[in-house]
Image (cartoon, rainbow, N blue to C red; front, top):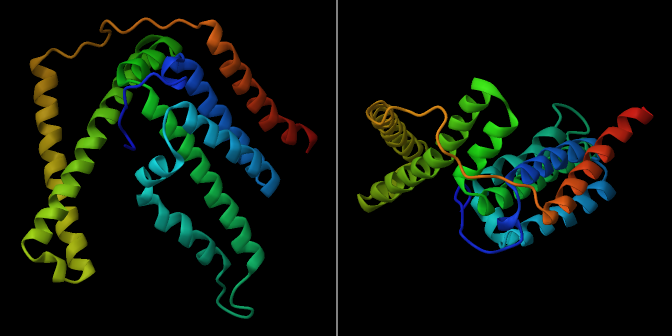
Length: 240
């Protein structure tokens, strides 16, 4: 469910996508400004609230980002390791662990947005926020990314299952990674070629009819939350 919209009637589903995008940006800024355990604890409650507001669960969204777990878990070990005595520095590992946890919180908020926002609404939000051809180009990119990534993930899963069905599970890890990666790249290039052909055949529209977006009263708390997060992100730099 990482890169897929899930229809529903939750609070986040009814919000304007521009407000949700603003909350994402403000949350990321606040997460990078407040790296203490206390600050991350407050942001953790907010991230869980975002996931709940989207009608999902933290376990579901975190499982969708399981590919990032090896990097987030090994980062503190690599950061704390030294080539000489004392061989491992707890302070460096602790700071790296906080950074990994911060990335996890940002991914949770992003997953809540993807879960509660249709692709067309995301494209409309980008194009109506960024003017001109730049906004149209970014809007097309957002639409293609959200539609293309689930297909690539599905191709990789199919390649892995096909390899296991043919007895590839007994091969060394390096060979299994090579087979899956090669099959995934081959299918990705094939899909890209078909996508380019389909865009040409359908006369790609730079300015299609997009859904109407309108801020309502229920969006005001979201904008206020984003403003508060931005202020919280700026204040530490002003004090410094």
